[in-house]
Length: 531
Image (cartoon, rainbow, N blue to C red; front, top):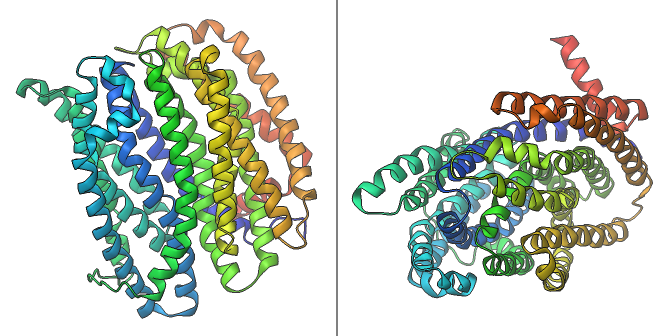
């Protein structure tokens, strides 16, 4: 197999770049949303309740919306688009949308009805604080229909991705955050005047945002000639294939949800505010995960599906290898940056209003431990679609359940000494283990696959990251007075350090001649000269 970049490297990078730009907008709006939460509610009673309430439909969203359904649908839809023609492809889309609309509506009704016992199961320690469980149950019932909107939005995103439309689907989550902010804040300011808790307004805002995430994609979908016609056919072969492909993936993802359940339960048993600190930290680490890991996963999935449909396994290997190296080249330096700048970044973004300096310290601790697993979390996002393309979905399932066992063991051993930090540490450890497990399986499943380009690329990336980290560490000492001053010096200091780090990293990596980086640079320069 060729050790150079895949012939699809440029296309993947362009698609991932479009997705990254859209995801960046979404994540920035998401951070604004978290800033509003931090300023209005701080870290404690109300926000703890919101996080747990939102986590319940969100667990199911990961299964149906952006997990098993999305990956399985794109794989089968790509096959239909390549081999079956437009009529059969649109019929499949209508069948899938109708089926999941009915299924998710039933799940939502059940979730609303059983909200009380679900909350008590997830966060039984909330019962020790008067009114906290009741508030969580109220918001769970408000936010449960979010599952329907966001899951259907994921199906529409899958359709558009197979048509090489990446920007609008990725931008749709920005409208979720926009709806959450505008709708949520407006209602949060209104609700206390009518005797309702302000935080419940943010729950209604979440529902408004989920609706917008679906609606914003529909004009682009209809522009391809699609029209929604409810179609119920439980014997549809395409639907059966999607459900069969989803089954092992859903079992595997359910393991991830068990991990989240375990983590939430442990966090709720720690001191008040632990759920909030972990959530604020994970929101920050999701920025590079979304921009790099998710973006490349979305961009590469249709290409891997086509390689598999055409039985082009050499092309599949090259596409996977290039994508993984590009993801590592972005996430490893991001890991170093987050560890070095955790406290200044959190102070700049969140330390306003009800969010205190103590909250900054505790959140920075969580962010540091989460950051260690960033590269693995993002890399797994690129690895899993390869298993779907190969039809080997059982291995991500096995990896997920091994991660559950490891997660429970690590947290149980460290929770007393590390408190909330134990949960972030365990998350990083289990993701690294999953990365190594899936990587080992793929190296054996992909016939003729060579690890040499990946190992050489990783050595260059780590070397450049270490040089960058040294530069950022020195700059942090020099700019310490700025980082401890008002908001404008803090802003200038953080951006100077990030900018200097990026320049140092790119300069070293360019000197070391990473093939994927050289290829993308050459393409960008060619386009710049052309323009």
